[in-house]
Length: 381
Image (cartoon, rainbow, N blue to C red):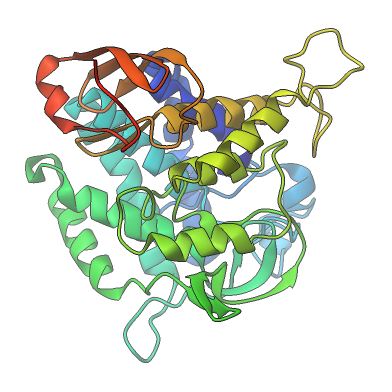
């Protein structure tokens, strides 16, 4: 699940550490044969399912799967209810691969790795679930992360499918196989809408179309903000996401919680500022080094705590949507900052901001300067 071990890898894109992401992608690509085999044995259909909590070679953690052979299991799924129907992992990895392609424009990577992987992940959902009376996929049974265990159309999976179908369809068509083109066109027509609910007369994103059995503290209703960037600064209907952010329960800026990232991507500067200050000051006093954050939900040092801190800072400074570059979209105007970050299309942005002014701005390549959007409070020299 993204809010645990994969957030530090996402931070690497803005840091320009592209080559350090390749081992993660290659690990999951190496698991593809087992993922396809497991899907065929358990469900008798095509595609690839990547459950949460797998060893690096692809099998599910023994404590999650159980200790019975699949041939004698009545239900060909892991026994742990924490992740039983939490099937967003493959969608998350595919979205990370798309971002990698967007930043590097590596068409060989897209054609040989990202697109074949994504096709099998999307194919799993198309094959596994039936359509309802209106002709939309009905994701049931499903669960919304570890939080809601009994769901119909869980938001993380629905958001992930919408995001990937949209992004794959927007890519150069010569990169797509014929089978992927057909699959994307078919799934696009049968995807259910993102779940929305009304609370205290306010409409907002929901954890799922139907949800029950509350067990944990993630905010699945905000996955359409991150990692599946369907809502955010400059995008339509942002109030649906902002209302969901303020209604989330519980709240917190520690561990693998993503509250600070959500706030920054929604342009909520004050909330993002408060969150990262709290997060940066929380470290395990039993250890000598301040970067040994924790204890939180799991052990110390907590890499996810630091990963969220880094990612939050990055998106407070820079947010990108395809070619669009939003500069300082959630940065406190009273904070001076000097930074260099990577952006899509092999772009780097260097900024020195002091006393409400950008005193130095370098965009490489220079032609990408036309894609920059500045907040209203910024003054240029």
